[in-house]
Image (cartoon, rainbow, N blue to C red):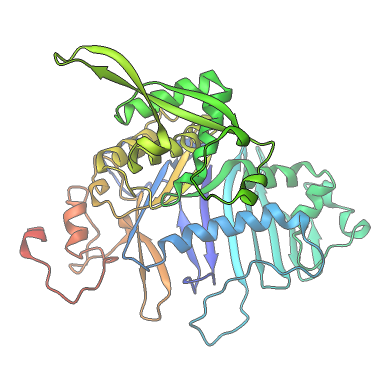
Length: 431
């Protein structure tokens, strides 16, 4: 499970920004759900980010995605290829490195991994591990071309630096992993297999993932249908068929050269089943709808996202979704978050990190104060984040457990709202 992510100098983020998913022991929220006990620590199962447009919510999730991209693709980099460096531009401190660090658990070991880099090179890199029955060990630390290695606890790397050339733009972790290092590949595999960042606005890109699960695996099809039924989208059965591109119908005038690029490939078509009724309301038949053509945008989103959601819940993954509530009814968004927070529905400790404008979710019946995070820009237009549990209000106190979170947020009491230069109506203010 992910317990910490730190980023510095990326897009709208200037100074160091830290997200902690450790469940706070200092608060006495009524919710006994929303966390999983992992390696003797309580780790939160969901985090909701709120903030005005352009506050940097999406950039924070992009930072997670960018760190993953660098780790996963480092092994493929040639010597002079540039790194995806996208720094904060509203500063007179040019050429500063971007920093990423994660803390996560895999099995019974807690790893801390991070690096600093610019467009041309990795400047610093480090890996620490807290293994069972051992104290925290720094497995390696890289500063420029110098690498210090704990030969006893990270023996897989003890002679790598001497035998293989490490390009300045490549991660040492990927070099050791390429040579077969078990610990290194465990860390890389977490980024590859356990961390997924998706867009709630461009959900069509995940349709094929869901379609293939339904088409290839009856057990996963049943679980996806169970989830879809729970979302009350109006159908309880689907059928699939595999089509060659030559058998598919395309709109008149669709470029033939584009179709030819997919020659020989197959695609999965999914149809939803809807009951047909007579005048008395009796079911007299079934009508099949091609989902992408006949179902609503909201239904398509639920269907498209069902695959990644089921995958996360089944395999204990970290799923980050930007604009989770887009095209979804507030009750459905609530239900989805509730599933991740429920230990019975989420037995493998899957985590959902999402951005949203749905204030309906700001409820002590759904989220603890350490699960609610706000995003806003400071006077220098740099993004900062902070949890509700730590916010100090104008009266000098932190929000109480019995506060109306939604009402207070809309009244501007927690910050992170659009500055419209208007007076908030008294009806929004808590007495």
